[in-house]
Amino acid sequence: MSDGLLTEEEVRSYLKVDSPALGQLVQRGKLTAYKIGGAFVRYRKDEVVALRSGRKFRLPDQIERSWFDRLKDFWSFYSIYILLSAFILLLAVYFLQA
Image (cartoon, rainbow, N blue to C red; front, side, top):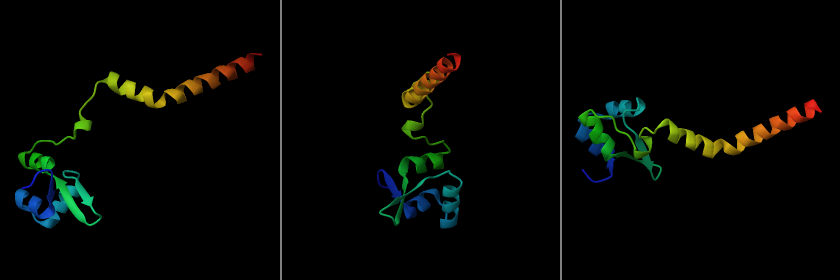
């Protein structure tokens, strides 16, 4: 097997499955297929090896993060919307009381 990406034929021989079974693995989300050049299907070697050994494969960006890290990401993305909403709410309260 080569490094990085594997062809469909390499994956079938490594996992010892036929084409329909490989298609079912992709459909069920057990394996991810990547189209390269629009026609060629490739599979990540790490993911195929993990599937054969029974481990769950996770990309590095899918690693669990703490609630504080998720909160920081949420704030960095939505902070402008939260601040603008609070400002509009304060303006509405100010003008309704006047």
